[in-house]
Image (cartoon, rainbow, N blue to C red; front, side):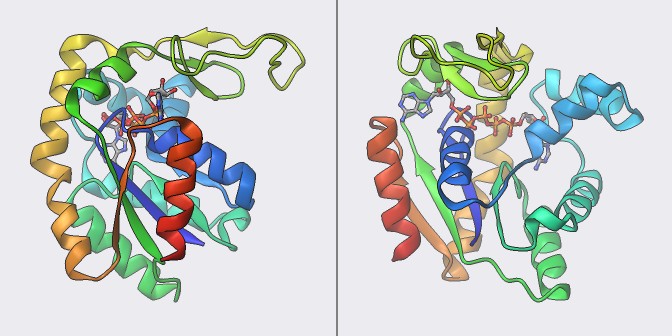
Length: 215
Ligand code: AP5
């Protein structure tokens, strides 16, 4: 299974990628998570990316392609992967196609998550992430359940992403419209695009996603 999950910030790509990873045993490859790990580790990449991410802008295409090339070469990606947050621009999509052509692993499908912008803002305002295991929650729609434990057996250690403030969210939604939305036509022309209505319960969206990749 080699999938791209495409959609605006807050459309549920990361949440569904984590659920698919658990169901299908193929890794979620989230470029946002890879960048946040680099920021937390204080690497040169992380130091350069932090300001860009905090401003709601995109890290440059050459850097992102380098990150993806390295990540897809790891052994756990040999059986497939779920790309979450990549590609985000036409040059990234061209670069990905060239890379997958080189290694003889074309994409199976690109799934577009459709969600109303008002819902997106509410989702991002209430998002919380566990610092230790990386699981994504929402204060209202998807809080940790009573008794839900993190990998170390303790409670989840939730934090709010610094780019989830109102101003940066609006900036990210604008960048999505301008730089990422053209990928919808790009992948439709290649016959890879599947749309799903990503507004609904987690289970409903799960079922739509599974049906879309079987189409
Ligand atoms: P990234 O981390 O990729 O952020 P994003 O694309 O903006 O997407 P999000 O993580 O905000 O949303 P999501 O769709 O995963 O939603 P989620 O499942 O969390 O990127 C961050 C930054 O890194 C970028 O701004 C950029 O600077 C940089 N970057 C990353 N990749 C890059 C690239 N390729 N090129 C250049 N720069 C790059 O859900 C959101 C909330 O909604 C959660 O609280 C969740 O619990 C809740 N929720 C999910 N589904 C449902 C549902 N069905 N019902 C109710 N609530 C739901």
